[in-house]
Amino acid sequence: MNMPTASHTGLPSPLGRVLSDAIGYWERRRIGYNLVLAAVVLGWLAAAWTRLRGELNIEHLLALFVLAVLANACYCAAYLVDVPMQLSAFRDGWRRRRWLLWLVGTLFAMALAWFWVADEVLPVAAAGLAGTGA
Image (cartoon, rainbow, N blue to C red):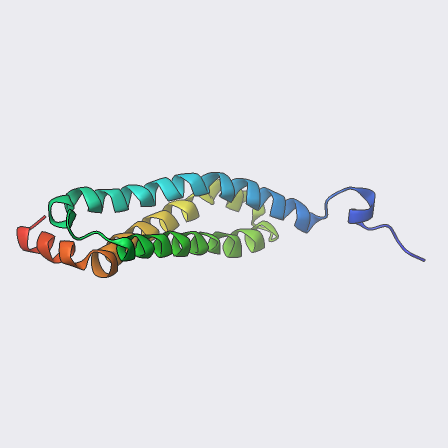
């Protein structure tokens, strides 16, 4: 005898509800995350523009593309924390405070982007800025 399951009745399972909530929460905030990281890169470009004018090439653009892909892959780590917390007894408190995970993760990503651009993407500009005290 087959018992109806949540998927057969049209009602989402508890895991389905948690996943839907996590996707709704985190994917809306991915836009802000990407805008903040783009601002970091644009800040680098603006600060180093006089040294970069003749130096930028397709390799630099490809490196920035790799950085963007890696940053978005790392963003998915939020699900590794969010889903188990929502399935725990701490769900209500977690849902009120999970913005802190977004904030800490975004600040960490900003620091990584800053140093990665300085070290891997635009080392000539980074060396020049270090010498000027900027």
